[in-house]
Length: 431
Figure 1: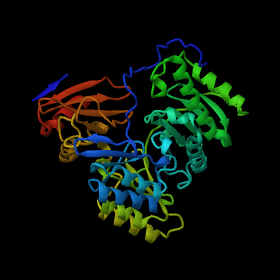
Figure 2: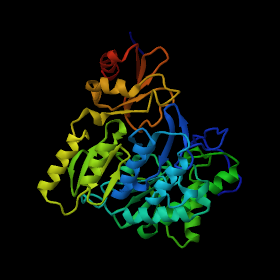
Figure 3: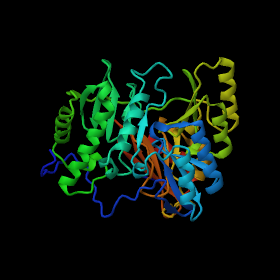
């Protein structure tokens, strides 16, 4: 059935989205596993999504020997290993440490950094953010204070094209036309212009200032926008801290961001592929490592960029065909680009449905109304994207509730008692 429908004492701010926290941060990592219905889960932080081939092979080995045989890509360009057997934690940590994926055990859950995946590969960015990425990750791992960051706190390094700048990071650094960098805090409309060479240090100063403000406020805020502060106060405090470090800064208006990932296909000196529902078996993962020239770059849109500098056109085209044959999406018109889902049943005890199976079964309906679909097994909607979309949320009666969220359009909802009626519901709320 279809149914329509300063860090001193701080004052609160109506602009904050403070969330009550009655427990510590339980975000999983590689040394702190999470127990799920399908076994233990490890989340391996991959700063900037950058993996050497050796590291990628180590992850495949871990998934095959210790887990469910699949690598699960996240919306932050990280990798989750699921279905891990009881008691494998020490072996997993040893394997990942040997591959260089655990440079600092005390910081492994806070190395949350997304970066423009095509930076330095297609000529579109204003700067190559790789030096920023290396410097920020090293500074994070060297900071004793940074250990207190939540596993949900996110940094974004944008090369100026505006892709990862739209992902809602807590601290965003975006390349500016004059060689500088715009430092933005949470969703604030203002930014601080700092010298490009100081961008990594400025990002860490911002994060450490946030932690001091959290301690001073007596709250348990995990994300920057959860901290109740008067408008602009944290930015002013960060500015003073930067000046103390000898880093100049100027107040600017934050630029808009698109939050679009690289399209599948040949893009500059790289191949770009999409992973359906972010789920990749070991064999296609190893196809990626075989065609790679040295590294892989995982994207926050559950894709993979394979840099191929200096490769001939024939070799690049043959590699793209090889990845397509392995089940990776190489067609920019594929409906898979407009579909996402949480893990659902049987992996999650909270889920009310096998949302991945239902999403795959209704793939033809994707893109109706020009909006992406995100399937969720419960109201938490884990991993749901930002921006315009249609949420498809499982309900206790075996059906789904649909909700349209789009700028400039009135929110609309519909309900279906079975996923087979999805197309009609989509037509209703997008008409």
